[in-house]
Length: 305
Image (cartoon, rainbow, N blue to C red; front, side):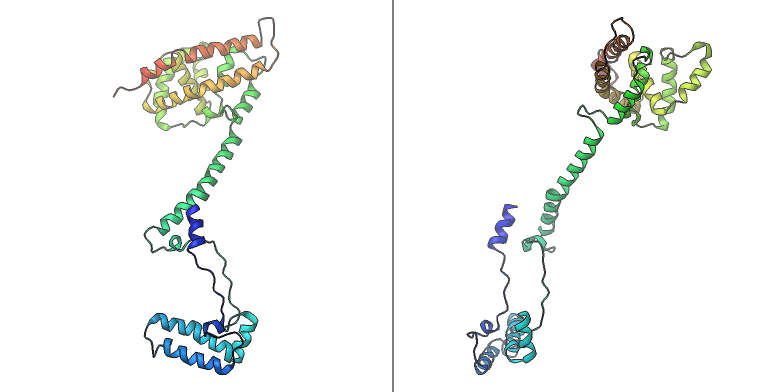
């Protein structure tokens, strides 16, 4: 940007005002005879019949001839006196003061430099601002989605049974947004068989319970099975796609559980060892079971090269 300012200041030309007397080499207010003499003298020097140089021809037509008309032809002189030019009112062009080499598309680097300036100075900051505002309105300072907090606030009640804490935990918006693929159906069915005993299903009505389980939102089904795979050390059998989801689940879990704990810390505790204390105890058990030796588990399920 500093180079652009320097170039504009020191290299760019000033706008030239049309001065017919000056063009003909005369003092302002010269007589008509002096005007004609000067015109004849300049015609010998610049007229196309006398000088084949294209630049001389251009200067004669655009300056000398128009200057002579402005001082001798009544209409041209009237236009000059009113508008400052023998051809009448001239359109005023306004533009951005950029050096010519940036606007020269035929140049080797002008177009690229112009695109670079527009991209880095305008578009890039604008995109960063849009992304920041979008994320800041979607997430809390702990990078947990506002929608997740609303869901937790709705379902987490003081009377919530500790066994239901996990059901609420997996309803986080971050987990609900995880992809559900058709290719996951068969691997999840196999995983369900492996962890079925940990899902708190009523064995007396096992068929009904299983049907009810699979009728849940697909993301809830996947998250519950992945968490149980971790708790029962069945994650080694996950497919590459499910393994990716499993790792993402573990990455998000600490922040989500932290928000749950903060939520209950804001409510007065019950001193009789029941209610909220049991819920918080359930949180601690989940934290302990879910993340105990988590690093070792990730290493264990990582395919060897």
